[in-house]
Structure formats: C-alpha cells, structure tokens
Amino acid sequence: MAFTLRPAEPGDSAFITDMLVEAGDWGHTGATSPERVARILADVKAARYVTGWQRPGDIGVVAADEDGAPIGACWSRLFTPEEPAYGFVAADVPELAIGVVRPWRGKGIGRTLLRELLDRAHAAGHARISLGVDLDNPARRLYEAEGFITVDTRPTAVTMVRSL
Ligand SMILES: CC(C)(COP(=O)(O)OP(=O)(O)OC[C@H]1O[C@@H](n2cnc3c(N)ncnc32)[C@H](O)[C@@H]1OP(=O)(O)O)[C@@H](O)C(=O)NCCC(=O)NCCS
Image 1 (cartoon, rainbow, N blue to C red):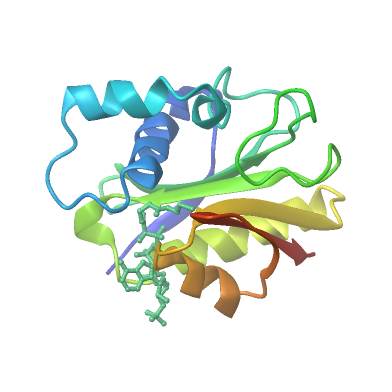
Image 2: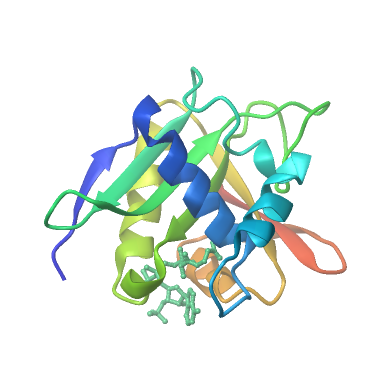
C-alpha cells in the first residue's frame, strides 16, 4: 500500500477535523451521520483538539495516497489546565490525536503516522507527550506497543504518556 507522509498545514483543518470525528466515533461501525458529526464536535473538550488549527506549537503529520488525497493524520497541541482536552497532563506536555480513514486502516499507516509525530514532537523540544483513549478502543494496543504508559485510569478511559 503506497502512501506518503507530509507535515500538516493550516489548510488541513477540515481533514484533521474529519479525523477527530473518526476518533470520537471509533466504536461505531456504520456511516457517521451528520447528526453524529455534530454531536462529536459539540463536545467542547473534544473540539479543542482542532479549534483554530493550525496554532503556533501545533504539530501534525498527514498521510496521503498515491493521488495526494489525505488518508490519515496524527497531530498534537498544547493545552492549559483551564481548558484541557481528554489526555491532559501538564501545560508543557502536548497531547496527540490520530485517525485513519476506514478503508485504509490495518495497513500500518497509523503506526507510521504515530512514530513520525513522536519524532517531530521530540525535534520540537518536548520531553513527553500524552493522549486520552477509551479503555476498550483497540488503539490502546498500538499506544502500548509504541511505549505509552498509562498514568491515569477513569471509569471508561485512560490517560497515557510517552517519554520522547
Ligand atoms: C487507531 C488507528 C489510528 C490505527 O491506525 P491503523 O492504520 O489502522 O493502524 P496500523 O495498521 O498501523 O496498526 C497498528 C496497531 O493498531 C492496533 N489497532 C488499532 N485499531 C485496531 C482495530 N480496530 N483492530 C485491531 N487492531 C487495532 C493494533 O495493535 C495494530 O497493531 P498490529 O497490526 O501489530 O496488531 C485507526 O484504527 C483509527 O483511525 N481508528 C479510529 C480512530 C481512533 O480510534 N483514534 C484514536 C482515538 S484515541
């Protein structure tokens, strides 16, 4: 499966928002209806992953198919204690999110995107990176395999951190 990676740009806002919706809808097998999209984006804490993309400090990687169409993205941004997202650890620890379009999943794109994002966050001077993930999301296996450690467990979700 041929795909390429490129840095995310301000113009990727809509695609990154689509990938946020995929992350919010990970357990749903059917099509994501406009109502589901609206409900996911109405969650203020979730919307913070993409609002105003691309702000200073935002880091992102986009995977594209052979025609250059985006098929996945992994990105990170810094949050504040006052306005955190779902995997907040500290104001100097960026938090990442990731999504791959459905037909392209299970082909190594997510892992490749994640590793590239970790490299870029390290190159930007960050010592750690965090994320929030639902307890039963199989994406947890990817994060564990890539060195993320669970630092907080809630009833339905965990916060994970990786040293860079
Ligand atoms: C999570 C996600 C980005 C992984 O991308 P991907 O391209 O499918 O992942 P890869 O092909 O690189 O596989 C990496 C690992 O992901 C894990 N994994 C993720 N989702 C999985 C699923 N639905 N079923 C089985 N394994 C899954 C596996 O451990 C896999 O490793 P393995 O092949 O060695 O078993 C993608 O499945 C996705 O977009 N999911 C919906 C959005 C989401 O849940 N985002 C994370 C929110 S915290």
